[in-house]
Image (tube, rainbow, N blue to C red; front, top):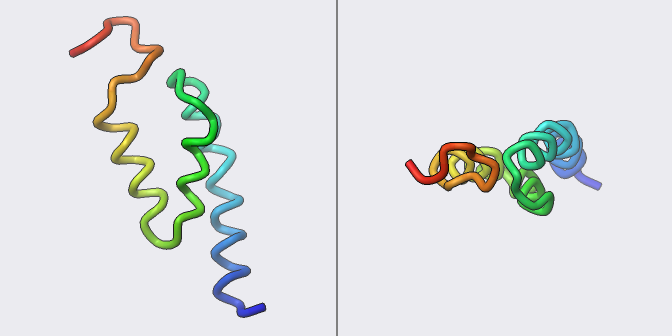
Length: 63
């Protein structure tokens, strides 16, 4: 197995747990955290989604 694949999966596994916790606390479904496994842009996609979507657990509703 190429080293890049192993490093990518390890990095994705390290980032998955914090992303899972953030998604749960935001009131979102846990499969959204799987986006971190998309090579190179996965964590950026997750950050953009979290930044611009309306969170179900937001106490103030729509802003």
